[in-house]
Image 1 (cartoon, rainbow, N blue to C red):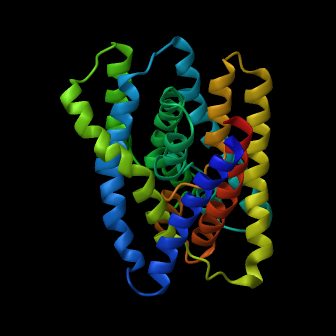
Image 2 (cartoon, rainbow, N blue to C red; image 1 turned 135 degrees about the vertical axis):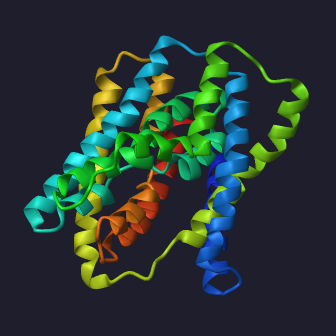
Length: 304
């Protein structure tokens, strides 16, 4: 009965993604319309989910580890992307950028919110706080430093960039509230719950609209190779976390879920800013969503 319920809920998530994709290819919505859903998710429903999660969270010193891992895992993926690009003759900075980052806020969090206890959200939030620092400027700063002809992002512009991220600011405020055991008034929590409940649906619908399956099949071998490198690196990091890290089992499981996340949606955008004129960063990003979707469903059946 439990397996049937999980299968039904996972299928419903896939159907919502499929609905978004069908609406796009039928011309009912455009790919550009995803920015509307993205604005709602990133500025309304996601922050509401974060505040709801922090209202019941218990913060311990062990939570600093997911924050550091969010940064370190990005750095390792940067090394993998840089190494691959150097050995294949591609632009090193673009190679670094297109494999980096985790799309947790609009992909993984809705899954955790729908299938795992509310207490599980905190580990994911803390990991994504570290991840967000890299995704919203850290990885790009490293990439621009590789190209000597490009001016790297200054500390001031980097701080300004991340300070404009509402989700990151909400992450930090949520963690502060949880650390100080401060709970929002029940009236506010009741209102936030309405927006929080809408987050999984809007996030999955947005992913469907953004999904692009019009790939150049002549390049499918290289795209598969790039994904193999990313997945292999995440499997290695996951094994180290699971077998060697001194943290509780439930947190280990949530960190493995985080590592199953697709590539950050910011990666192809920054790759373009670095001078990429290829569709490769966008294509590998789209394929990573499909791979992560399959892995996420598997992890749900293993962990729930």
